[in-house]
Amino acid sequence: QVQLVQSGAEVKKPGASVKVSCKASRYTFTNNDINWFRQATGQGLEWLGWMNPNSGNRGYAQKFQDRVTMTRNTSMSTAYMELRSLKSDDTAVYYCARCVGVDCAWFHPWGQGTLVTVSS
Amino acid sequence: DIVMTQSPLSLPVTPGEPASISCRSSQSLLHRNGDNFLAWYLQKPGKSPQLLIYLASNRASGVPDRFSGSGSGTDFTLKISRVEAEDAGVYYCMQALQAPRTFGQGTKVEIK
Image 1 (spheres, rainbow over the protein chains, first blue to last red):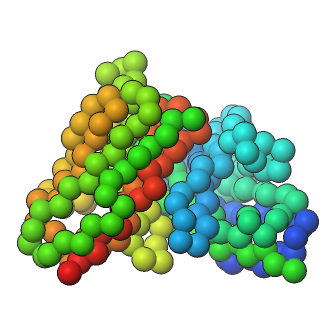
Image 2: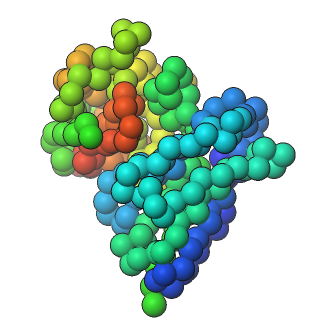
C-alpha cells in the first residue's frame, strides 16, 4: 500500500537547523502534494505548509514563513522539510502526509513521524 | 484562520455502547463543488493520525462501518455505533477548505 517513511529522530541545539525527509513509495510521487505538520508532546496538530512535488511550488503557514523550506528530489521520490533557527518550543514530532482529493481535501497516509528535540 | 471546536474533549465509553463527537467550524466548510471539506482522524497512542472520514461523510478504505460522519456547513458529527476496545485514542476533526489547515483540539476516547 501507499507509504511515507520519514527519517529518524534528531537532537539539535537552539539556533541550529534540521532537515527531515519523507520517502514515498507505491504511488507516483509527483501526482500528489505533500504537506507537513507537527505535534508537540501532549498537544494538537499544527500545519506547517505544502509542496507540489511536480512543479516544486509551495506554500507555508505564516507562522513559519521565514524559517521553513520545503523541497523535493523527484528521482528519489523524497520530500524534505527544513526548519531553521530552532527554538526549544520547536521540539515536536514532525509528520509528512500525502494530499488526496480535489483541492487536497484530505490527507492519507501520514508518515510515521520524526521526533525533533531542541535542547542546549 | 478557521477555528475548529470539538466537544467533548474527553469521552469515557463502555464497549458496545455508542459514542458521538461534535465538531464546529468558525466558517462554513462548503466547497464550491458542493462538498464539505471536513475530515476526521484517529490518533492512537504513539502513532501517526489515520484517516477515518473524508468530505464529512465518506468512510476511508478499511474503516469499519461502525464509524459514520455527518453534518454540513459549520456543524459536524462523528459517531461510533458500538465502541470497541481498539477505538481508543484521540479523534481530531480537520478543515481542508483553506490554508492554513486547522484541527480541533482533539477528543480523547477512553474505554472503560
